[in-house]
Image 1 (cartoon, rainbow, N blue to C red):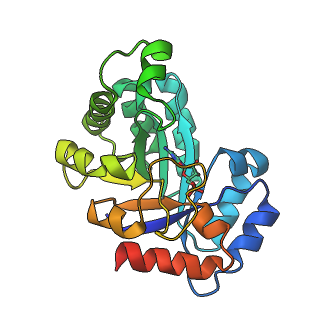
Image 2: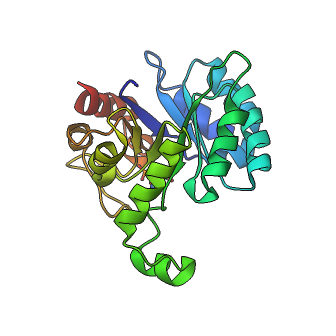
Length: 232
Ligand code: C5P
């Protein structure tokens, strides 16, 4: 699995997305399309970004009964995305069904990763709202192990958890980590952040970076800096 920087294209229209992507004349960054852009523009935005030569992480976090997830994943696979995801809370059976749906007739499929506990969930809300009484770190590692046992390729996690996920699930189990900020940058609403270089050192395979690139005065320079710090 190659290390890479994925830009979170958190825009609400195709127009804003292409105005941003048009700035990249020499490189075709790996981009993340989330719910906002996908719900605004539908599958045509995926096809168009793909046609322009970008790799795509479609971040829709599926969570439903196994049969529905399997059929949904089959459609996403035909969209030819490179990476997509689901909630591990849907159980191993749902994750296995997702892999079946995602696998193309020739046996290939996009990288499939799981969300464990959302980083917006803390110990208190997990105990009170979900009635899960175990320590949250243990729950995250358990969900990661279930994802591995179901045959998934990795998890989305905080960069602070990436090392432990690799210790638990093996070094080839992919960690995709948001919450990245430059050392001299604004942290915004993220709470626990790491620089690209730190994320590299602790073993993140992919970093997902939004505003430090999308809101930069020079997004191309910010992206190149991110790649230099993370990959080089
Ligand atoms: O702008 P920023 O770099 O904070 O964007 C991070 C991206 O990663 C956003 O698309 C956000 O939704 C996503 N994300 C996150 N934390 C998670 C899961 C996803 O920040 N735990």
